[in-house]
Length: 90
Picture 1 (cartoon, helix red, strand yellow):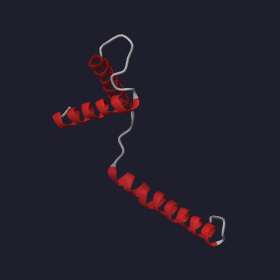
Picture 2: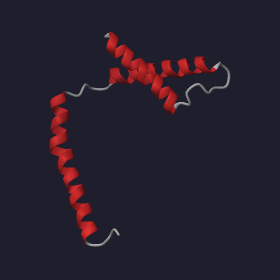
Picture 3: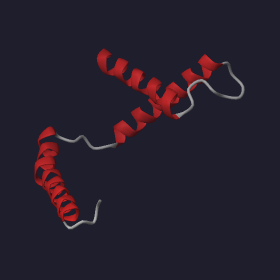
């Protein structure tokens, strides 16, 4: 693993532990140790999931964006415009 990816993975896991897992709150260990334990657990989960997920090629992702998401966004805007013009929203 490259050093940049490792740093990004560690920083992301530390932020996820702080934001979603309660940070340093825990019953038995001091706060910083709880945060480190939660960060390591998130890193382990991300590595485990990352090895089992297929790799998405960028060209396929862009194709899905243009062929699926852009038309759906335009359709959503059209539906909202029709509802506003017909007086369903005040």
